[in-house]
Length: 164
Image (cartoon, rainbow, N blue to C red):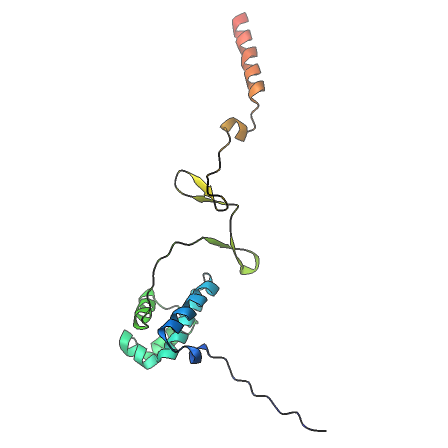
């Protein structure tokens, strides 16, 4: 019987595969898509890019201590927005606003678009699955009022008024 050789596994480190600014950008975009509303995930992604670039050089460019950067971008801490902006700038990246679809976390934290809920555009409500606003029902139909019965009641009260 021969002995089975032992396998050695190494821990995956994305930083080893990030070489260019285009790699940084693609990695960060993928992390934004994956993270949803998880700020710690984004901070850790920035930390991975920072390690790929060189934390000492990044500390020098941002004016933030190397140890503070490691701690802030570990995913465990809650870095200030100022720190995030300095890191993004030093990495040669930009933070830009972009109009997107609002998402609501569904069961098990899965992001799901809400086509059944209207998107408020001021005075009109537009449904996400349709480009035209939905027409509102008349108030009488919304409240379930029977217009025929209401007019019949008026005529009875008018008749009573006329009799008296």
